[in-house]
Length: 220
Length: 283
Image (tube, rainbow over the protein chains, first blue to last red):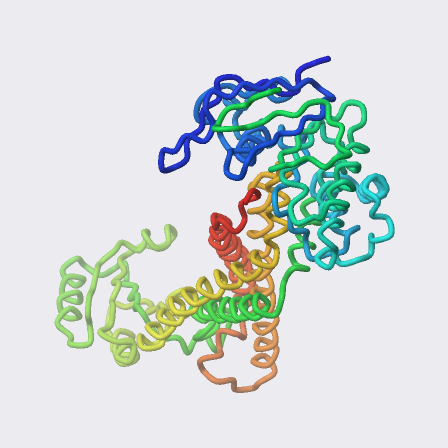
């Protein structure tokens, strides 16, 4: 297996000097599914932002898909982002139908109309949103919004899927549904890192669970 | 359809009442700005007037051709006599070959104190012994076109400044409102690795479209006025310039180009709104 993520000696401090991440080391193989657990404000979203090449690192090394994020120029950084599917915390869809949300993303990524329609259908099928495709995305339930967020993140065949707090605002049964959905999406080459406050739903069977506590990564 | 045009169509689809109103005002102000620019060139007499019209232009200079048989003393006497006249502002002697290589003798370039004084002066010159010809040099086309009164010029300059300033103000309001209703799309674009170099040209494109529409509208208005003036036997003096088809075409194309350029600049100015935290892809 090849390495998808390699983080070493990663440090990050907030603007007011508070150390959020301290000497973080992380190693994720391609095709792995990792849960990143940690209390609120422990730096999970920050770590995902750093892995997704959205936040420039201050100190340390981050290799994603063989690219050193620290040394990437703006152009290469954007190129890397295009290979990463990201579902941010508190995701809000666009004021369009479910189908139009997906088509917008695919068309802006340079897909032709037919190609975008095909990929839209695949993403809708994969996330169980076929019946809601004509519904205004802002009228979706919390669970379906997460489904749509995941559909948007995976529709253009990313190599890495970063999911931030997918269980927020969901009840126990819905959390299990989301967890089962992520498990279904975890096929073959796709590497998934899911950050959550926990506890994990009972039906979760990830490859690894990592805890982020006091700015450091711990594995049981 | 290319990605740019797809995204541009989507951006236009995000225009709501508030942004439409601001962009409408921007377009209207742009039109007034371009019309003020155009007014500098079209208000005034025509440059392509018929022959009888050119004869009515003010006389700028008189050229008195001297007989080659005149002695230098006679030329000096004529020169001094004319220089003393009250209706002569300036006088210069040139060899006739400087004007026309086939000619001989001398020529006096005489500038009257005012165009009104030229008629008497011309008659006097023609009656003088030793003169072979007197030619009246009338104002050039450029000078003829710029007979706009100073107060009108100041008014137009003020209109230029006010309309330009206000159009930038309303354009920024329009862009702010538009980008607010397009914020989710921009966040997703940034989240997915789409560069601002893709987003900014969309906004500049919208400015170009506004500038282009204002320019085209002015072009239509100028041509309507042109046909109106041409159809009139005695059009108002200020609209004489609109009789010239060449001038109307030049001003129309010039203001259209200016509209497109300024529209693009307004778009780039509006793109500053993208720096707001509202468009950050991560919370």
